Image 1 (cartoon, rainbow, N blue to C red):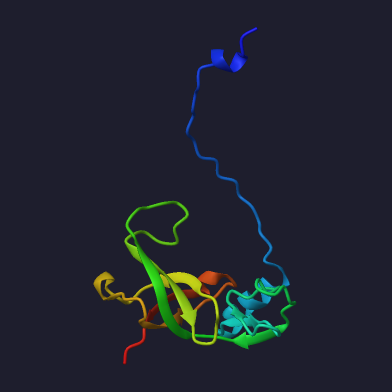
Image 2 (cartoon, rainbow, N blue to C red):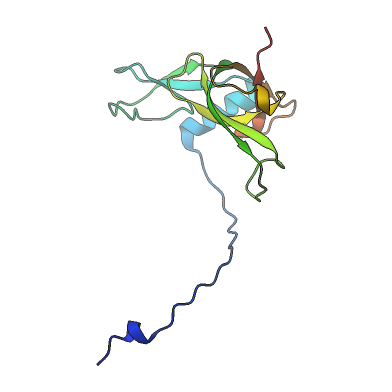
Length: 154
């Protein structure tokens, strides 16, 4: 008998499925987002063994697997490590293009935070530039309570 797969014609149907869901950020993520919402403060967690400060905060160190209990205020200023310019539209984007994302290493953190860049022309965005967080006036308890990061004018 012939292999049945040899007799079947390939067919590809392209589509999108949107699945609404609720996601819990847990105790560490909740504290992080509550601090953003209620106090406009950005916190990470510090490892007691290797001294890394994680942002966003984690419960366990990714290097030495220690439990992380110490909270450290790391923001709101930092350095732009890398960035990308967005020119295409997608339903998952936080705003209409064109806009810029960056990875920001806040001054007391060991890991970077991905977030929007604004109040800057694309041609003026440079790795190594100093930036600061701009918070929404009305915050709801999510990462977008930080509206964006902008260059620090010196």
